[in-house]
Image (cartoon, rainbow, N blue to C red; front, side, top):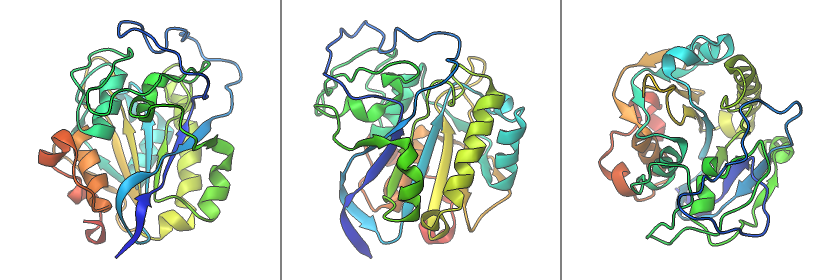
Length: 283
């Protein structure tokens, strides 16, 4: 059943909308980032972006993107290891590039666009939207949706609204990009893992997740030693499983598009979708 024409997107972003600022392709999108974590991170924000296409009734998909951790390293954090044991873990899931930006673009468009850095690039298909400025700890390079628009999305809302969204009128698609501390980029994995564990608990307690929902927790790239990154899939039907099938970011994009009955973009067209990690009803 196709209940909706537009796919509402919630992106829990760490990006503040301000006047567009143009930068050259060689300029890092987050040059002000520090190697140490802030003592008190600013509140996160969310972005809702409508995407054209048919949406299956009662389908809710959540995506949380973490940072720079290989599978082996992630499983050393007790909170992440616990999530991986409780839900479904893909043990042979790989990032497709490095650094962050091309992986985020692959996850959301099926292509890295040949980009090998975190700078500002004008993409040929639809172009690159005006760059959004953002204060630390939030990084434009971790907000792929800003690269496809022409201005700051008007759907930006605070992350503290997530609980209300989970109670009622939950969007069909929820994308969550934590800040540079909570995604594990600048803070210890133990701290990021504890934050992630608490966030997952809030999502899986929601009616939207319990009723035909799927939650994907994925890392953008490895730690420099391995491109195998964790992918944890949480559904109410399948839990406590490990699968060693070969998947990558294009597989995740393909799975999300298949769940919503949308055409696959770019390399997702030929990717192996995550059907083994999802219950039969979601195929």
